[in-house]
Image (cartoon, rainbow, N blue to C red; front, side, top):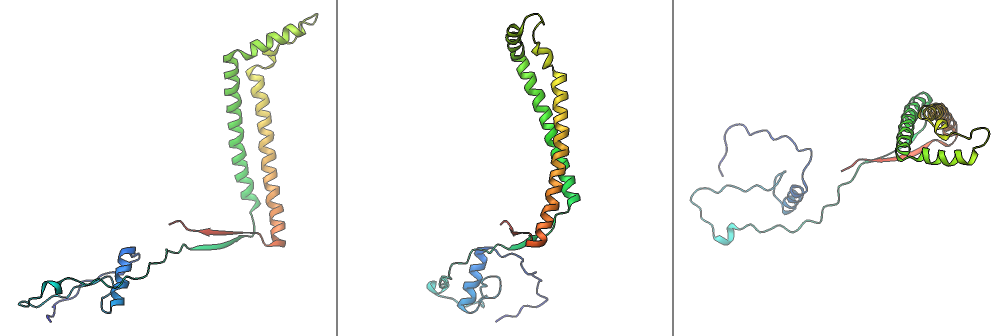
Amino acid sequence: MTETKGPKPYHPPKAYEPPAERTASKAGKGAGGAAKGGTKSMSKPAGTATAPSASRQVPAQAAPAAAAPRTRSARLRVAKADPWSVMKVSFLLSLALAVCTIVAVTVLWLVLDAMGVFSAVGGTISDATSGEGGGFDLQSFLSLPRVLMFTVVIAVIEVVLATALATLIAFVYNLSASFVGGVELTLAEDE
């Protein structure tokens, strides 16, 4: 055998070994002689000839199928919900819902007005209620400023009630979690 001179290069350990290399290294270890990281071929001294059948490598016995990679999972328990953070998050979410409600009502009113629904229904109601009092004017009653003012009032009430209700639910959860232990969650990582 020939001896190599000089320092050997450093090969850092692999953090992740792909499945093909993993099965090849296991098969090589099972065959009794491969180093870590795969099979190595030995160099032949100069001047030696081998028969063609000897140069072919005989495949090692098939290793058993590698088990599927395990996913790590952790069982955690939500023991307490901070009421202050629940209040802040619920306020922001209910505020976003209020803005969406106002925008949706505005768009709906503009579409109905463009289709002429208010004038058609208003004319029918005005004809049905006309008399000495002059009838009911639906178009002035359902004007955009009046509808938006009503929608804003409803949205403000929704923000206050949703924030208060979520905070109350956090307090009730903390009280019940002190007796029961809280909600258990199982978290697993994606692969």
